[in-house]
Picture 1 (cartoon, rainbow, N blue to C red):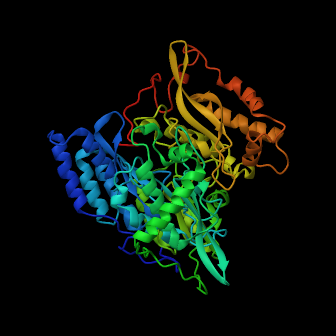
Picture 2: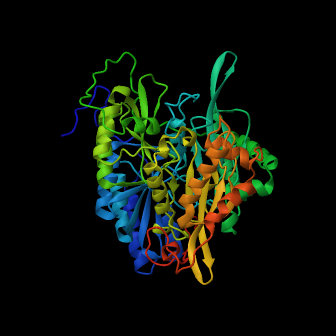
Picture 3: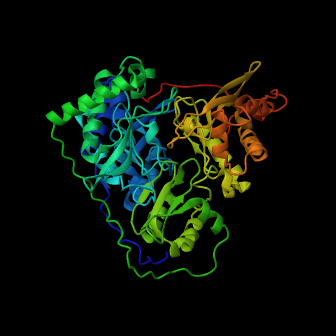
Length: 598
């Protein structure tokens, strides 16, 4: 029996936060698939068309697709979660996957069923248009925007307006490569410095009046070669944000490398040209855009900010506090700037959530969130905001019933893992499964409760292309293969010291670690930290100091301490060593054609 709504909950509404869908695109997709199957629509043209509509190729087959659903600014309505659950049951594998870019993915959808999924999404205001391909991808915004104590103002409406402007915009249909926007709430809760355009809200006082604006960063990104973005200017007023964005996209469209797919992201153009020169081009192009274009964007109107001042709260809490509550409260929630309210992060395993759990989460959001919506997070999770502190215990009880109460969501005990060889053509290892194994090991050891580890992160990619964001992890890994004699085994390159905050720096590669030794190596790093750290250190600050050369222990010494764990046994000594996680057969490298660009 479901719990009655609290006085803080908004009534269920069928109106989505943003409606960017077009039903006719589903019909057009169905017709295009038919022509492709009949051989009248060329394969390369179909591939570009499919990606433009958010249907990504699935590993080693052309008969299935992964549908990537765009969630602008990460804001998702309960009715949309329910629809995704239904579509997953009908057309996918009875689960969904939360990406690191605030999208929700449905895997292994039969190509002929993609149009049915697009139609179902459109009915609740969702779209996958330009979620893949050479276009502006899903516009991200910190899940804590609007509730973060350190923010200047809520960046959510600006992120949504950016998404509304660029979707289906002719400017955005044939870029040299994909293009990504990220809005952060503050320096600590976002990734503005690793996006093509990253924005952090700030204010300044001019003639006694407060003016809104942003710190704008350009030319960052992760991949086989990663770069930290450059700050454009000290302060960009809010009225210049869209003009600045248009200017950068136009320059990329005009000057980007369309011949070399491996070097045609914006970050390569900025690096090749030099930041000072590219910055001058942006400022000149922005002046031209302002002089020649009149741009008006309707700011999306989502659910109202909850009116909480003076509200009388009636608690429905009954019974004893369930076991594990204190541990969950510490590692999955934080106090908002709105007095008495918390944001709750639902921790998942490598971003996976079942259809049943999606439905339950939809109900829980309606019952416990005064905002009435969820926020897809940066770390493969979903956040509920405006949960009153008196409702935290009954909320935890509800999450326990549905298997959604894993602790550690805001700690390194919940690693990021890309899809890896479970579906990606480029993957070399099963990073997805490894992330789950690491999480289970950490939780079994109660490491999520260790304050010294709380601010650190573990991020795992199945190849060097960084979908798992290993380059900005405290402890990062990207997949590859190793060999002993004639036998291959899965392995990972270990990197240390990456971070995306105000002290943004890319991780430093240390040594290659066999897949089955990744967990022992992480535990050994933690052991060395506990032996050698200074009293005020946490793991993140300690590793940062080491890789920056400011500690009495050096990177080569760390490498030497870890090396004994990386020696491979023979196949006869340990056959399991030569199989990847989730596999019972010997490892081999096999990749297909990547579809990050088309």
